[in-house]
Image (cartoon, rainbow, N blue to C red; front, side, top):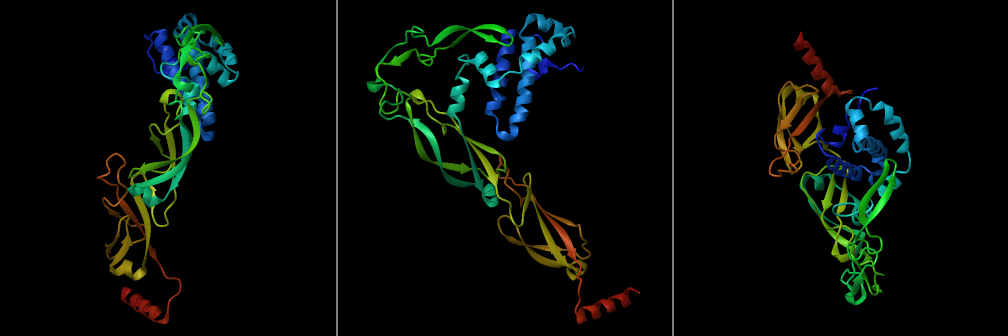
Length: 348
């Protein structure tokens, strides 16, 4: 069996402390938790989540870590794998509940919003502004987001006002003692004397809100915009973010690859043989281009700077490529037939 590099999986060094390894694990576990993944990414997140759990279960235990460093990890990998076969959410919540440096996982998921918007090809190329309606939680005006009627509080008796309590959590890797968020006051250290009747103490109410979105030049299909503060509000005015997945409708003429655009141009046999000047569209205007005599099917013309504005540098753009096809006539008029017969004589 090929030995996995658990240090590389967690993004840590062999000399790092257990605390550093734990912090790295928590960050990765949050990012790749299957419950946060979109349907098309869920399987990928599940596999990654298993991998980082396998790495952490080895490196956080001094004994297992020594064996791993000595190349003996196969002795305990099977047991570690079987212990991780339970529900992802249960494992994640038991290990991390109330132990984030900033916000708990549940709160972060609830605060962020995910929407999808479809725009036209040209809107993606040159940017635009859109208005969308989103259902979100907004701060309660009656209690100013505090959740308390008249904004009167008393100290939480469960945590003595600290907002944190010490708990022992049983995990697949043993019992872990940690300081967790107090469930009684949700980490605030105080509870309302009376709950706000308008929001039932939540500090926020559901509302349908109109949001103006500025789509930047050069954005592509499948990319995501993050609107900071556009998500749900929670107690005391904290706000999540709005993540907007961009879908771009195909264009009838242009096809995009990166910041370059491609189009097909069909020319006549005589235009290819003699050369010509033809008018074609670009993203911004119609222009005339020169077809040189003797052009063949498969020829490509490059129009520098006629492509998509660069997302990070909109003053510069990609290029436009014109793929040329020579249209050989299948049916000829009498006059055309006569001309080609004359050409044959000249070829001799």
